[in-house]
Image (cartoon, rainbow, N blue to C red; front, side, top):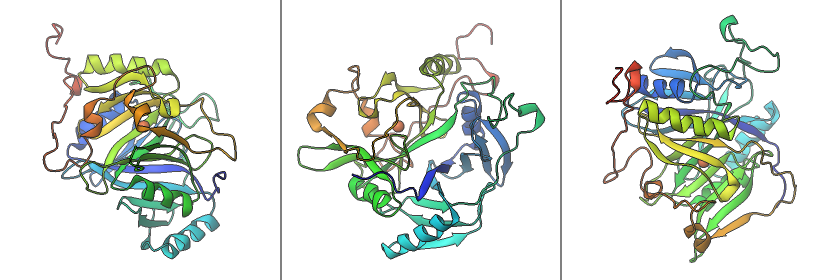
Length: 339
Ligand SMILES: [Fe+2]
């Protein structure tokens, strides 16, 4: 296994569909501590405090939940041009568009499972207004005193009919590398983790049990510390946000995690993988067996059933409960005598 080829630098932004934009923005601001920079035409531009670009999430008012687009920043204008050619040479169609949220012209295509993937290079660096400016010049924005203040959009976990095939496209065409995977007893690859740099993963594909395509398992945001994740769990208790599972530690990739549902129905992870890097240029793909997966997470927590049954947008027959936080819009959780 070779090191990443360096054509792609990092995740740029995700466009996340929600049937309730106000409620979704409330979640990103009040729980994750992100900042809305503007709202235009049913789209909210949301930034983590250390984003050097305007935003890393664009929440979009839509009929249902799900992932609309995932954008990657190429390492140079030349890499952008060459990857656009490589994508088409590999048999996938694409088109050039004007950029969004300060990004320059953008090549838009789909991965083999139908998720929209966009590539860009030109971008506008964020300049914080005076009331949001950080004390240090090497930080994009002051850390908000609200929510837990996630540092960055860390990774995206797609659902796919064929995770191996979708992940291979990122490796073979975009120059990423696979770092870990799950192989079932019948040889099927049930999940695969891919990175474009020295973080141990940026993009993940997990098998979609419904057989549908183009769906989302979760978006993940990195906190500065593990303690922030414990605080997020307490904050969710106070604000009535549904916790799906955690806090706990994954065996795969060793990420400390907390999984939540934002009010639009999409699964959101708060993660703390900051100290774990893959430095070796010849890092072998670590393979987890079916038996090892059945042991659950690192410290023994069983994998929760909804992890295998909930994706967005929901499909027919899927549990479509929307967990609306009881503490939204300034209301305290029911039963609180102070309300
Ligand atoms: Fe994750």
